[in-house]
Image (tube, rainbow, N blue to C red):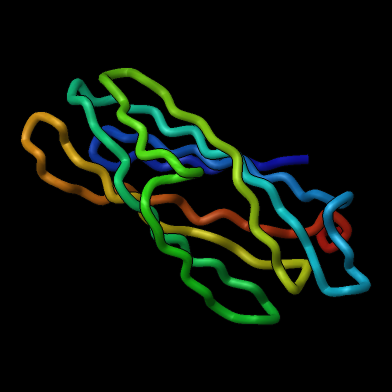
Length: 131
């Protein structure tokens, strides 16, 4: 079971779909693995490039941690008008419930102006927790 959230900022749409990974989790060891698929759609008529990411991961056991870095999955993709980029990544929590949200730093390739794109908040909840 997965759930999707979506947010559009300055013509760039970020959609997140989350999946709990029971085969990579070990509740007895307080390890809960979640995969998430990010789809980035450039709805603007301007080519843009994803430069950096800042993630905020809230774990009900560990609290808030921040992950920052260049690009995503080793890439700094360029999206022309109406192009889509998709990738899958994962997060490991120490509890069966948490959430993530963040921001991407993009560059308008016509003006070289940088701008932020919101990554919408999404919940990381093990399926057995929801019952």
